[in-house]
Structure formats: structure tokens, C-alpha cells
Length: 238
Image (cartoon, rainbow, N blue to C red; front, side):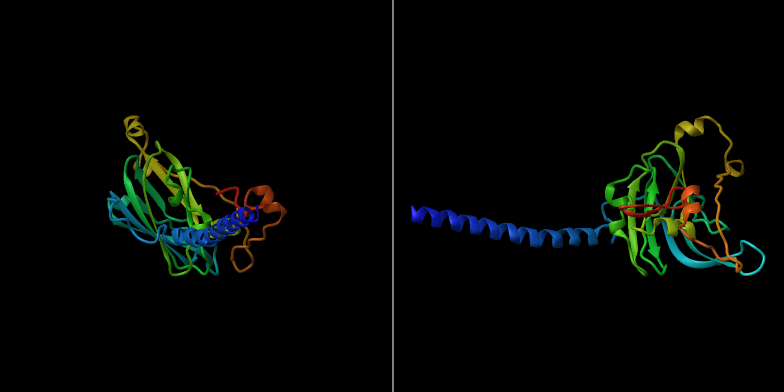
């Protein structure tokens, strides 16, 4: 009986040791996988369109007097039609125009003083390409997005998606249009080109020096710029 107890005890200790080793190893494996996501272009992905988006601190003329410090995204087409990207004269991020079925590779460069990540709001993309906050990149780093446009024609948008900082980053300028066209829409002969005007209406507070004033108080909660939850701080409007 004593021998049987010792055997069972040894089995239990062995299983406990294996479990402890697995628990110690799994976070490392998870972190390693997380670090690999979006760090390099995939040789197996053949994009129709390649663009580069760089987040930088800029000063833009919104009022007379001092220019306003914003976090601005600058877009550049590396492969494909020049009309894919329209850099806005205001502080908004570039307008991106793509067609259903196109494959796109987007290099997102972070030259901002904070970690950030971009989320494609409303687009059907793989989970690792959706701008999960755990994939946020630091200053000087690049995230490579690769996905096919699966959505039908529509007005979508993209924005910063950093944990606990989403609302503030969007307020500072990290948001823009993502416009998708398809064959069905084109067959309708709707107004296009200069007659197709995307419109966004926003409300922002400024101080006496023309600088954006983000307070995160009750009025911002009511107007849709701020919401706090167990998951941090979030935007509720573009």
C-alpha cells in the first residue's frame, strides 16, 4: 500500500512539474508570436496596392495666429494609382480609396511620441491585421498590414486604437476616411471624382494659443469623444 502511495505521489509531482513548465513557457511563446505579427512583409502576399502611412507631430493652420500642434498621418503610394491616397490639408489623416477584391499592403510608421496602432473600422480583415492594442508599435517602429478588401462599397474609416489612449489619439488627428468601391456601385453611375465629397463634422476645443484642448470631462462624454470603461479610455465618435 505504501509503495502504491509513493508511485501515485511521484506521478502527481511529475504532472505538476510539467504543468508548471508549460505555464512558464506559454507566456513567452505568446509574447514571441505577438512580437512577430506585422513586423515584416510576407513573401507569400502579392499586393495590388502598397501604401505608407507615417504618423508625425505637425503644425497646421486652423486659425489666424499660431499654428495648431496635431498628430498627423502622412500618406504615400508606393505601388498603384496615385488617387489611392489623398493627403488632407487639415489635420485629418489621409483618405484611402480602394476597390473590393484588391489586396493591399500598408506600412504604418510611428514617428509620434507615443505607442500607437491603427484599426480599420468596419473592414473585414484578419484578426492580427485589425489593429489590436496589444500590437501597438513604439516610436520608430513599423507595422505591416496585409489584407484583401472584402467589403462591399461603403464609407469606412480608420483610427488609432491604443489601449487607454484611443480617444485622445483620435482627438489629436489620428483618424481618416477609408472609402471602398465595387462593381455594383460603379454600375449605378453615381456622382464621382470632384462630385464625390466625403464629409466629416467634428467639434474640438482650443486654448487661446490655438492648441487642441482635450479635457476628457463630462461635456466630451456627452458629445461623443470620451468614454471610460474597465478596458480603458475610448472614443465614441470620429
